[in-house]
Length: 446
Image (cartoon, rainbow, N blue to C red):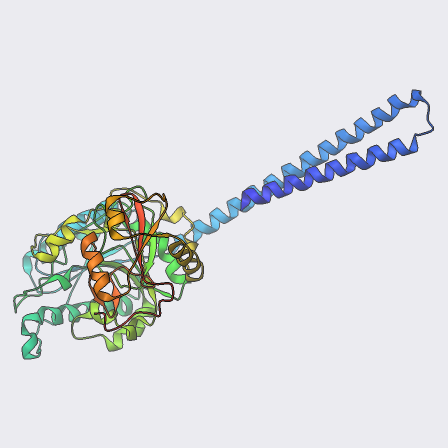
């Protein structure tokens, strides 16, 4: 945009100069038709003097225009910097009975650029003394709060084996109340765990693998850079650092800066505002909070913003757990190791009105291919491609073949936006998409 303005100003200067030169020439030529040849040299000298003066005037105009653009650029850069100066983004880390929470805290402290801007608060459940001692060893580098309610929770008989989910929901609700109402923060970044992964939980424990997480070098940069978008766009209700389809081989390894909108609440590492918590806390569920938050009654058509994948993300699990889900998916997700200067980037393209127009156009202008053509690499077109799905079974079949997660929550496929799941395959962008006349998510697809 600045280059276009500069070119426009230079163009106007040249047009002005050419016009002056042309009319000056005509004027002198016309007024001296009857002059003798001896006056020609004099007229040429006058004309040259006029041209010289015009050149000087044009140079002054160009110089002034450049100074104006430089001042404007400096003002914009200063304004861009100021929008981050007074931002305070606390990190809320959930812990229970695992001393390995130190892995997460070590990385957070290592990469944290400013302790005042990014205070770290650990909320511990379980009253596990070894974990408490581990956290306290960090001294003033972190703050520790402990969930006081350690009473047993009454659950329906059929859900006894899932009692841990009830304790987790209780812990999350209490901790977020502390952050927003006790500490009075306006925004919080949650470092949570894979609690939805548990298949078997000891009845006396809320162990949920919440502390085996590492953060990437640009963890703080990512959330700080995307903070203004969250504040600006009311159609966004969270910023997430997680992508369920973030396996190596399904991400663009050359583009760690890629960001997308998604209708699927990712969780794990995410940022929310006090305004959202004021909306949710009075009806916070007794259990299964992550599925509850994905319900249309809570989401209300709002989206989250996420990175391309954990290969280019700020959070990635390092789990000591086993299980089919981990073996099929999470063990292949790679932690991002590249620093992306998000605070210096223009992320306004993520605002809904802009994003929707460009995203839908790009998706539905892409060439339609089959899964087999994609797998075999038999595609002459060099750009993005699209695979169309029409039914739930067709979607699940394609995702299983591609290694994508195939489940739905409240009818929304994991990572989808407007029904479209975008990923990368053999260096090519691929959109797994419904027809253009898509009518919305079907709640029966769950």
